[in-house]
Amino acid sequence: DADVTQTPRNRITKTGKRIMLECSQTKGHDRMYWYRQDPGLGLRLIYYSFDVKDINKGEISDGYSVSRQAQAKFSLSLESAIPNQTALYFCATSDPSPIDGTDTQYFGPGTRLTVL
Amino acid sequence: GNSVTQMEGPVTLSEEAFLTINCTYTATGYPSLFWYVQYPGEGLQLLLKATKADDKGSNKGFEATYRKETTSFHLEKGSVQVSDSAVYFCALLQIQGAQKLVFGQGTRLTINP
Image (cartoon, rainbow over all chains, first blue to last red; front, side, top):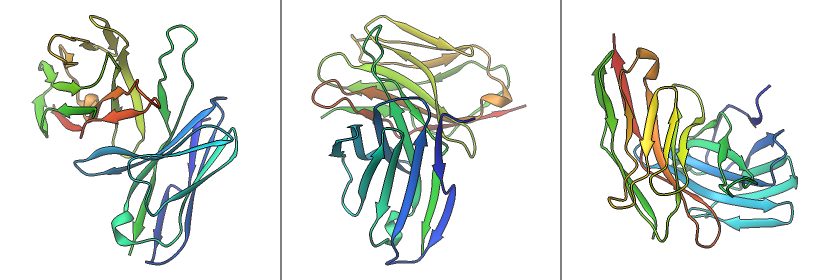
């Protein structure tokens, strides 16, 4: 079974609709992240959470919100979707290594969202 | 601010060719450096990493050495295979403030038989 899962894998919606993307992990990590990927731009950070009570904005948080329901679950919402939010969305998890402190991130398979 | 610049793609090579994908970075201090790979239709997978200067990360025949003098982390493989066709991302782990990954734009690699 995959350690980091995302649902749905694909979604087509219309402008103005509310959309929720979900992420679950079985790695036992405290830290979770949401990124979006656009062609030629790499991945950009939307929101991140270092534990259940901690939520932080990333570089492109406008138009998005998140909820950390449990250590294992981190949801991303688009309150009113617009076409330029069409992208590939990735969830990731991490925990600092007890050996060298490096915080390696592990990614889910992604959700392809299309806003018409 | 911190940034990562990767070699422009796409890159097309023949099987068994030598591969280099250049990556340079700008950062405060000495961040950890990573290469991730994205196969068609899949998420990102960690390929290799290096956490300090002169470290060499390696995996699946790929290697990259952390060069602080040139602020580089170039990815190399001696003999590529068709199955190496993917998009490769270089990234640094920002160490000041909250630890966050900063990605390059990605390099699409296609290997022809």
